[in-house]
Image (cartoon, rainbow, N blue to C red; front, top):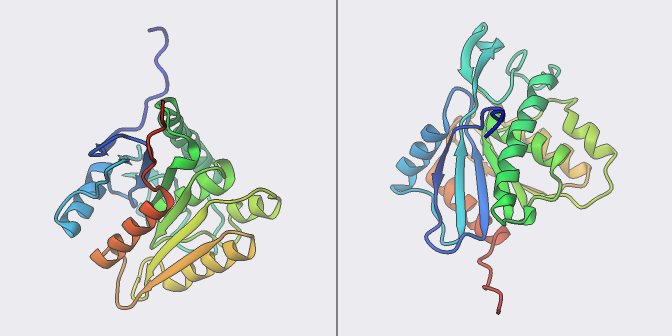
Length: 237
């Protein structure tokens, strides 16, 4: 086998019931795991978020020292100086994780799934990670979703889009007005900025929802997923 490749991200996978023609990558929030995010959604829906033709992949972020937790190890996609929208991004850790997640996207492409049949998104920090990955490195993906997420005011995502000419993946964003960890105003500002830079972005507002997911939100997300990744008729031989 020769040299081992860099460790692939651990992942929990929900296989499609039928023929696999599209893939969805769901990135958990800070301190969680792929398994944990899948279990949380399963608990809310009383079943896995599953589809006839879409494989759902929940990768786990490797443990790393996390500054907001005083340097304690946590499963986070990247480091932050603090949880706030007006501090600089920790770009080294963001970019190194973009490489790891690109490997995951490439695995799907090797399995015959075109990039315009792959969606990426996540909850909280996972949504922030997804926006970096799609809008800076993979503008040919089918779409991006960000649930209770935000980007910093001077995000590298905005810098990249200022120079961009090509068509961009659509963004599906949800946020609770009662969120005390990631303020609703941060999510709203992210949405406005991305729109001003040419992203077709929707923002679904959930009154009284804190930093969490709920059933209405996941059902809305599922409808959007199927709209972006419709079932493909098999090609005639």
